[in-house]
Amino acid sequence: MKNILVTGGAGFIGSNFIKYVLSNFDHKVINFDKLTYAGNLENLADIESDERYKFVKGDICEKKEVEKAVEENNIDTIVNFAAESHVDRSILGAKEFINTNVMGTHVLLEVLKEKKLEKYLQVSTDEVYGSLPEDKKELLFTEKTPVTTNSPYSASKASADLLCNAFYHTFNLPILITRCSNNYGPYQFPEKLIPLMIAKTLNGEKLPVYGDGKNVRDWLYVDDHCSAIMEVLNKGRIGEVYNIGGNNEWYNIDIVKLILKKLGKGEDMIQYVKDRPGHDRRYAIDSSKIMNELGWSPKYDFETGIETTVKWYLENESWWRKVMSGEYQKYFESNYANKLI
Ligand SMILES: NC(=O)c1ccc[n+]([C@@H]2O[C@H](COP(=O)([O-])OP(=O)(O)OC[C@H]3O[C@@H](n4cnc5c(N)ncnc54)[C@H](O)[C@@H]3O)[C@@H](O)[C@H]2O)c1
Image (cartoon, rainbow, N blue to C red; front, top):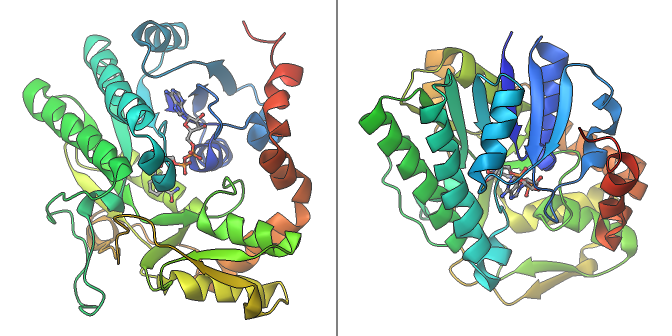
């Protein structure tokens, strides 16, 4: 049984990960989250009474807060999801991205070193590899692809990865890195492509698509990312990077058209808008290392995953409406403010 500090556990992937761990393992999970605009404790409402789960409000940039959470909960493992995660926001202002994604990761690594914890897993992204040419379909990101970043977001994630690598080599610490492609599924903040397009369609608004819509992304259902992280945590070789992908490349415009079709709406709702500056053209992941070495493979095909996801947003309209109106931020006040120890 492990005592895992999941940082950023109130966000999209973190909250799905906590539920995945509690359903499939007998570990204790401490959710350590600052509750930025992206943190939503309502994501975890159905498991918050589980005795193996606890929430601690804290900032990974504050060393004392991290140390206290680690000491008081006998933490042996850290899985770091905490980050500023939206590329568009990093273009508007990079400071918070450098603070949380780089400085915050540094704090966690110092705590790992000082407290001699058993394991640390850094949840990274395929965006650290830059962009692939659209016309060379045979080219995929492998773990050996050089890190080449084009957005402040990807630069901050790559910097964190480099720090992890340095702390592994210099101090011989038990560090692992995973680099995953685009996730989709329940509880994703509706600023990201799939939930944004679903919400806009249901609201009868125009669907904004960057540039010519021909940017290519690889998509993985969030539960498959969670299972991959647990495989790497349990069986991965210390000091290694593991790519995680769905072998599932889509043009953005085709994802948008698919959502419209699933919701019974026409393509006239699409509105092309000025492209994102520095927009990477294509990401595609080679996951053969994690598949061959650790025996991981995704369980969800895209058809099932997208069907489940669209259904979830249809059935949980109050969840995303509260997120979009900002009302979700009251959940912490009403459910936790008097309960924290
Ligand atoms: N979403 C994807 O498709 C994707 C793909 C690959 C990798 N990743 C990585 O996975 C991780 C999680 O992504 P997500 O989409 O769930 O992000 P998210 O934006 O939904 O959630 C981020 C969480 O981190 C918390 N947080 C932010 N700053 C913090 C701080 N200083 N201290 C403590 N908590 C803080 C937020 O409150 C939020 O709960 C990120 O590191 C991201 O880079 C995401």
